[in-house]
Amino acid sequence: MLLVSPPPRVHIEKRHIDELIRQLPSPFFLLGDFNDHNTLWGSTDTNQRGCQIETLNEDHGLCLLNDNSYTHFHQASQTFHTIDLAICSPSLVPYWKFSTSTNLFNSDHFPIVLTYVKNDFPFPKRPVKYIFGKADWPLFESLCQLTPNMVDKDSIDVAVNTITDCIISSADNSIPKTSGNIPKLRKPWWNTECDTCQKTLEKAWYNFRRYPTTHNIIKFKKARAKFRQIRRRSMNTTWCSYVNSITRQVSSKIIWDKVRKIFGCYSDTQNISFSNYNGQVISDAKEIANVIGQTLSEISSESSYPNDFIAFKKCEEQKSVDFLPSYAEDYNSTFSYHELKNALRKSNPTSPGPDQIHNNMLKHLGESSLLTILLLFNRIWQERVFPLSWLKAIVVPIPKPGKDKQDPNNYRPIALTSCLSKLLERMVSARLMHVLKRSKGFVPSQSGFRRRRNTIDNLLKLETAIREAFVRKKHLVSIFFDIEKAYDRTWRYGILKDLSDIGLKGNLPLFIKNFYRQESSKFALVTFYRIILINKKASLKEVF
Image 1 (cartoon, rainbow, N blue to C red):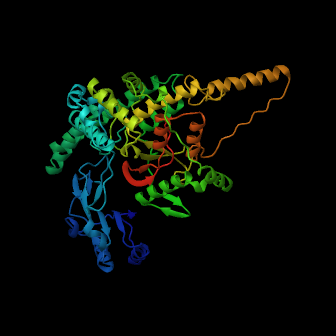
Image 2: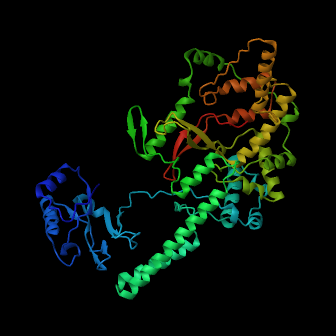
Image 3: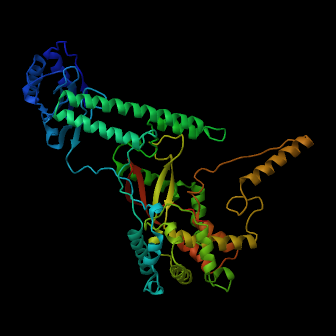
């Protein structure tokens, strides 16, 4: 696509134009203000530049997309002209439509709009989400009546699908959804008064275009002056409000984010236009998703281990891990309603998994429906069968900050699983943490994944050791290390072996063993707010 704007009173030789056309790769667009008049594209007369452009199209077999619409408004004479052209190769003509915008946008040229009319290009959309702020929760509770007969099915998978369908059907009838269209990114100073003045200005301009009289041009200029006044006042008010909101407690990130929004600049962290893989540039969205998914899968595969560990791993995995027989341990008993309510209370409004069930839906279920879910969880717990639908996850790659987004190695996978599954996992996790704490399975210096413990505890211990070294005039050696891809390369068999070594038997370790089966996941690539789902194998997912 080439944009040109030759001066109106400068003669351009034909050989220069021919040389320019020969240098353009086909197919191409040639757009711009040619300052030409010709009756072929809607002008009332024909000048020398118009004849020159007509000859150019005939000599090179080019096509003109213009549809006789006016493209220029001469304010001095208050007349309309067609001097902006859209020239293209013949192969592009069937797939592109020419039109002009009705708004001048404070210019004297109408914007040219080229529309791709072929239906093979998917229009980018955002994922459809539930609008919980407008939900009718009493209606949802009355519609979603989960009964015990839904659990008494032939298989657990059928029971899970029945309960899922009932929850989603009730949500569709009581909770509105977003349209999925890309929202307009308006500047923060734009308000309803600006919107009203703009509509008045557009109406005045429309009347003047149809009836170019003195009365209509005066009315249009008054509307334009009013709109400019309202816009300046709104910008000043917003700026003063922003400056007054800056305090010592406001972080610099929030300040610069507001500054960018005032200028109409929005962050585009989810836009992945191309990727570099093995020296090749990939621009297709599905191929980019496949490349990132393959890279994440290779990181968690056996090929990423050292050779000596692979040999040790194969030798150890020949020994079976037996969690039977099961004795009457308290951690293997059925779950209570108190455990379900406690886990649901601690659940955060996280993103839903492939079944689209949200934690907000589960928190607004009636007591009878929650008892039915508890009945489903206890059946899964006692029959030691993990539902196949809960083994599916949407894996979203999150780019690492400050890293090249075109490198597929610079992404962290986030697995979005079913909220029903995460609710049961939270209940199992509470029991596991209680067992490990009671059996002293934690190292005393461990602070991660422990209740009421965090990294500040370890920092305080380090600070105490440093102060003691200063007082005693001794040296203190501290070693800090970070294991690369530590979680992605976690040895699953080693986790199960550790659970067996501390004496866990029965439902609890068997649930974890069934959960760590190879997952069937969907890999989601976010590009221009479009979600592309490709079947991939997920890495080990964090649960506990």
